[in-house]
Length: 166
Image 1 (cartoon, rainbow, N blue to C red):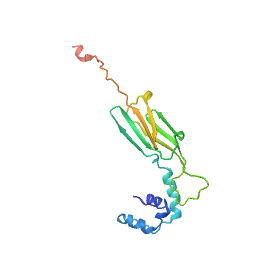
Image 2: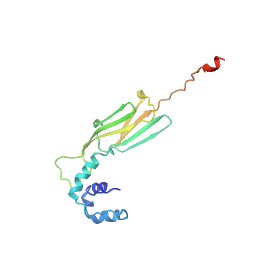
Image 3: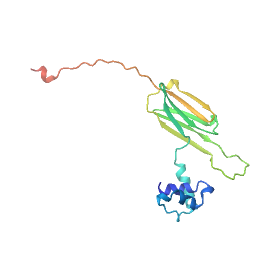
Image 4: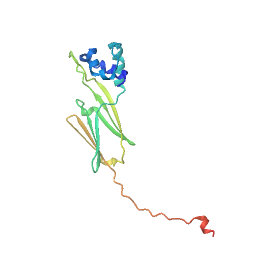
């Protein structure tokens, strides 16, 4: 793990501010933790996680007939989710609203955020038969694999020009 990522992880939660915790966890990596300042790492952490496309977490698997995507979207309203297929890319976008007004938070680890997840689809899809289901915070997208019947096309083999002149 590089030192920059480690610095970013340090400021995720107040419960992990104690430097001895990180020294114990990463002692085998010989990382020097003595010169890290929490206020410096907060900006780096925000920059690091804003660039990560980890939300929503997805499982992609194939069945005999389909490619299936299961996306974790806990707490996201169905009306906030948009899914579209553009060429070979499936895109899931939306907004996760977790902040409730009028409350005093002691810990707030789930941020409000807009998200966009792009997944490259490795097979031809029957675009007219795509299905989606949203149950218990899991968005399931079923992409039927296009079954292309192999057509046998005869190809005429021409004679070599040099052999025809003999």
